[in-house]
Length: 192
Image 1 (cartoon, rainbow, N blue to C red):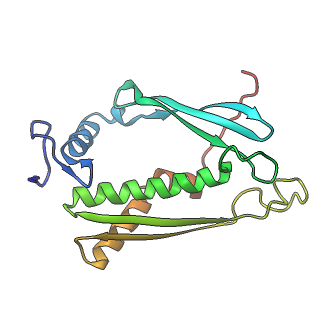
Image 2 (cartoon, rainbow, N blue to C red):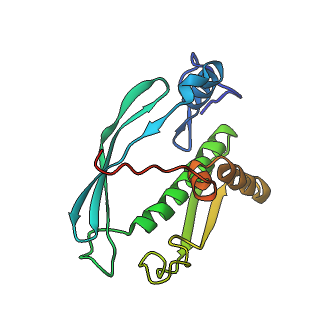
């Protein structure tokens, strides 16, 4: 495989670790030239199934100056194990999945951009929670995770310091990490 330091839109598409590197750099260049292209919107549509179960679908999204659709409509189900019939993971586990998948994608993309061939990326994410807050037992107890720990292992054709730097950069630029650690305004409109 041949790649250039910074492929242009005219360069044939090259991939590394399954990441279309030429397309990645061309998109970055377009957004640098026209920052309005960087405005993205993602949508999840949720429907109640029964009890504490619900199902979300993900299909349309907006970005790079246009409306798009995923190649197919994706679906995720959530449920609470102690109150349900096993329809799916809890919403809290979906948050852990979002963090792991966002950082993993960042490592893969960063490695591709830096010409590093990856052999594997594996991680385990754990979230600690005292459910007394969300059950209304104690209003002084936080309703969400009190601690999240992610153990990630990356193997590739780079030294340990470089692989660790990929994880650090991925964390620094992870949208999900920022959502979890920053303050994001959330507006709930009931029966709009």
